[in-house]
Image 1 (cartoon, rainbow, N blue to C red):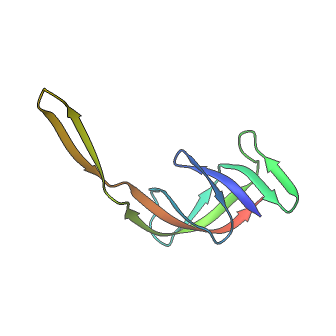
Image 2 (image 1 turned 60 degrees about the horizontal axis):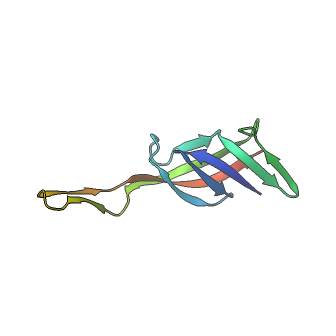
Image 3 (image 1 turned 90 degrees about the vertical axis):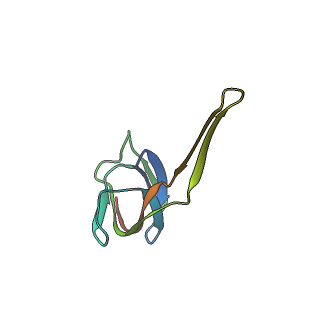
Length: 103
């Protein structure tokens, strides 16, 4: 059994027991999080596709922790005009373990 959920503007294929790195969620550690935007569910041979979401389906999980990704360097440069800008960025994320898929 698996489901396709949408959170943070991205779509994820999840199964029970999966650990995901999602865009940062406003939830504390060890709390339960519920994803209501379930786009599709496959259970055995039955595949249900939502328009846009599957009615009554939800995915629950709990937050393992928060963190920040590796630093990326954003460097802007224009030749001949002495224009240089160097910035670093670390994207925050939330680790979530999927507990249950309810179809």
